[in-house]
Length: 357
Image (cartoon, rainbow, N blue to C red; front, side, top):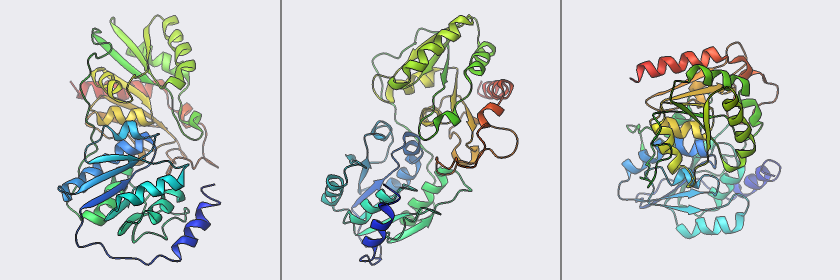
């Protein structure tokens, strides 16, 4: 629908659009980020750039139900407004009611968000021109979305179209205190996040037997392995925990009761977090946990973890690290995760832990 309807609709609407200049007075700025949790966390650096450039402006973060848990944890916005990518009429109405001076669309590939931005009634709009996506015709200013840099850089470059150079805030999260931090009584916690999300998520997941072998090598006398996941992951997490226990290891599952908040506390107090490349990986890295990411079809320089104690393990050989927008799997290698050995991940973990002492 986004492709077959979005492209012609966007181009039809853009026929009536004339590009405008940035307003001389900017008091209200809208920002629209990707609905993906990890992308929203990475966007927090660019959002802080906008806040630093316009400290007195009202900045409204347009969120969806999919990314609001991440949006609630990042600094910079004055408030959030919930929209839906499947309910265009009420969503555009809500956006128009804000009367934005400037609206920045930080999404990189959907045509629907470009349509929303065009119809939002803002005085000035900025968005990405992404190769093959046919989405940029309705913006007042546009920026090439690049595949040769980290997404944090892409997002910061888009913000700079409005705020200018000189800003380089790193992604950040604000983690509120919680009444009880799970596993606080444990002397040694290692968090494992096995499950990816999005299109063909299985191509970004590591074989379970390698997770067990890695855990056996990481285990100490008091180690508790905490397997994190969403409620929908329970039917896989529980049997995997039983595999760890059958291997003589202590293990529990953990599903956060409050979005990302308590999960962030668990990840930060862990001795180590090992994760596939997904939103929880980005949360752990940005929150300051010691993180080893198993990248597979992702490339560290494009979608790797960003944080003070974060490393990414890349698949050896040719043809991996190809993901650009998150869905370009066709014709690419399907064995990238299988190429990544237990020794590679263990060695990365030991080096990271030695440096973080």
